[in-house]
Amino acid sequence: MKSQDELGVSVPANKPLVVRTIKKVTKEQREYALKKTEYSMFSFPADLIYVDFLSDSGSGAMTDFQWAALFHGDESYARNKGYYVLLEAVRDTFERGDNPKKSINLILSGETNVKKLMDELYITSYEGGFVNGGIHQLTRPNGFIVPQGRCAEHLLFSTVATILKKKNKDITNYIPNNGHFDTTEANIVANGIQAVNLFSENLMDDFPFDEMDSRNPFKGNMDIKKLENLIQDKGVESIPLIYVTITNNTAAGQPVSMKNIKEVNKIAEKYDIPLFFDACRFSENANFIKEFEDGYNDRSIQSIIQEMFSYVDGFTISFKKDGLANIGGGLFFRDKGLFHKKFSVGEDIGIALKEKQILTFGNDSYGGMSGRDIMALAAGLYEIVKELYLNERKTQVREFAKKLAQNGIPVILPAGGHAVYLNMDKFFEGTDMKIDDFGGVGFTIELLKHYGIRAVELGPFAFEWDKKTPEQQKGILNLVRFAMPRNVYNASHIDYAVAAITELYQNKDKIPKVKISRGAELRLRHFQTGLQPIYKN
Ligand SMILES: *Cc1c(COP(=O)(O)O)cnc(C)c1O
Figure 1: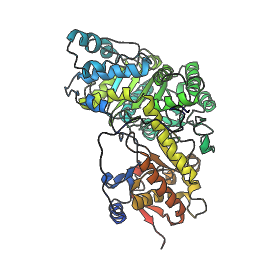
Figure 2: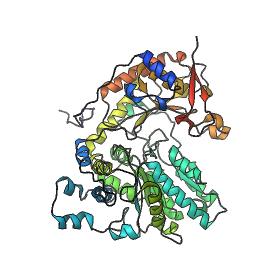
Figure 3: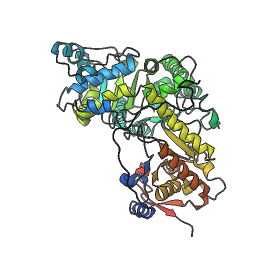
Figure 4: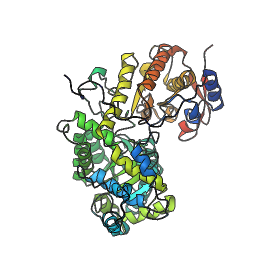
């Protein structure tokens, strides 16, 4: 008889204890609301939607363990107890592998032994890792809490840019990435640095949907040949940092292999350049490594994460991803590591970062977050490494992609970790839809109007095709993304979405072209502009 893991479906990983009911809304009501909100996905009231795939960011459901931790939140202005718990949880997650200390349990179990609390949590000192503790976090701060990932990016790149100018104001600097996320790129460019994408060459290769359970080509990898060429072409002095995004959100949410991380690390070491992760979906990436990379199947998720992070000098992270929490972000770098050495010019880089953190986000022990959210986040770091959770999540996204592929819908395969992406060039084959007709946007409007499902175009509209040079236009993929919130939807939501998408695919000649009716010139325009679908009579 087959074992529980051999049945070809995932073992159930949770049972919902709180349920939010959904309102019945008519097509006419949605049509009215769409018109009144300029057909923008970002302006449509969420309460009128059946299934919302707009983003997996901060949109997940928390576990009972997280809700319980939330009640222990401490709203003191300085050194709330969650601060200490979170720093310990970060060390447990990224440094301690199979030997976490789980000091959070001291708080959750109501420990009253003050000496124990001081020795193990409040007055303990720590150095040499990603977040110093006690006196070392005061003299050499290297861990920074902020409200979102982009705040960490802002802190890092604005500070780094100032130091680079001090070092040599005449050179252009470049930060390569296997795929810059939009806010990462925007924060780099806003500080006068160039952002370079080094996508893997196999990214848009075809992949058979029935092989998704047996192999994975790690299409999120960085192209290391291009990395070496860039370094030699521009010169080591022009590359202040190398970035690897796990998983690669911009490249259809595809995972990065441990082999690739090691290869990038080798190049970074060879040229003495600090290597950072954009670590937003580290546990989902670790789970892909466990399933598909030789030698990792028997390893725990925790030990794989520990190994991944042993190859980098620091990371920025949005704690809104990976099922961690509804809000939060962070910047962490290795104590006395390469980044610390290279950028502590005249003054300690950590001190400069801390000053900016206090200027913009508040005291360093809450960083713009509430004490409640800090506790929920710390608890979340222990929840998301659980294998049943990770497997069910991965299987859910994969099943969504598989069902679409079985219905002939052009979906990017294999499925990534957090979302399913449709290839809109292929979707509109055989119609008169051209790239600058924004067919992907027309598709999302019709999907919302007819079926109450929200997705987002990430193609010529979002990436501003009409403002780009022909060379830049070549780098724009024409995609629509369905991002999966964590622990929120089940098979019935997916089946409903698959049926709706299939119906639209079969009626693709009725999908309208779309014009920008207001604000075509605005920056970050997919959040702001007004749209007008052009219906044929
Ligand atoms: C979401 C995300 C960010 C930015 O994080 P926010 O919390 O949304 O500010 C950065 N990088 C990647 C890969 C992301 O997915």
